[in-house]
Figure 1 (tube, rainbow, N blue to C red):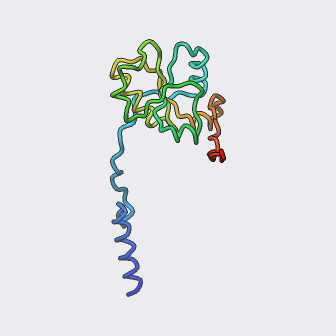
Figure 2 (figure 1 turned 135 degrees about the horizontal axis):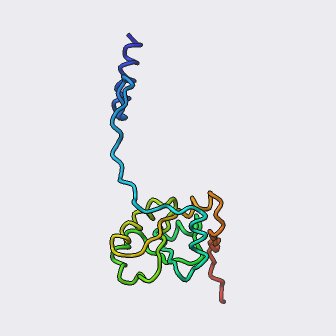
Length: 152
């Protein structure tokens, strides 16, 4: 009887987590569609950055992500949630590369910009780029908080 209760309990647990007890493959959870943007390789990004006057990096991460993970030396910072209402002041004369940690948000941003008529080369993940051997990520240490000196 204890074994029957244990088996029933395991079967219910499996169902609760979206799996059936028979081991057959269930339907995968719905996922957001992948971006249409090309994810740049280390070599592609390095080649594009060799002529910095022609490209514009738009980093769509929060400032704390840039400071903790690292970023590229020169970029325009527009968080992905603010991108659509910032289109009027994004230069149209340069090829755009969007940046996030692993190119997920950057891909969505690239798709949006391309749909709005911007010339987009692709998306890159700052962390992914560095892990693949890229050398252009800059890490700027966050300064320690300063205390107000006594002026007495």
